[in-house]
Length: 210
Image (tube, rainbow, N blue to C red; front, side, top):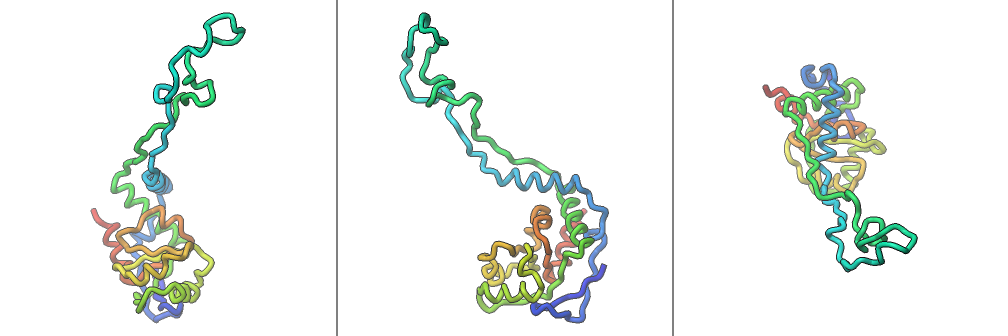
């Protein structure tokens, strides 16, 4: 598959980039995508939830009423989970939600996600550009020229570009990353994928490692 290279004004430069079919043209593996996205979301969980069980409640230990003759159920502690202010039965405790996915499965998942985007024609190739200073309005003009103003977009840089990154940080619908930070979740979460021209070969090199 060949895609035309656009400039930051949205015009064709006359150059074309050929996408490697081993990265952008494979038969997508939906289960690999599911595993990688599930791991990404699980690893973002803090796992700091906590509630007190009856042994952790501060309160009197006296027997609150006599055992028999009250006409109600017997009760031995104000800390009992059946009373207001008592401990919680089987409440949440801190835990680690991290999951493990093999490197080859993660690589397959990213290839599958990229292949889906290529099939949907949701990938744009843009020649590398610089910004003199961080300016959100200038970055927004680039998105408008590419027809991405109202779309959730992911811009992938070939190398770190601080001004472009800072210019995009205030925009909720657009995210800028480098090629080494590309993940399956980010690819699938974006409506359009914008690749800097220099990022294409880097992505293909990373994902074609043995």
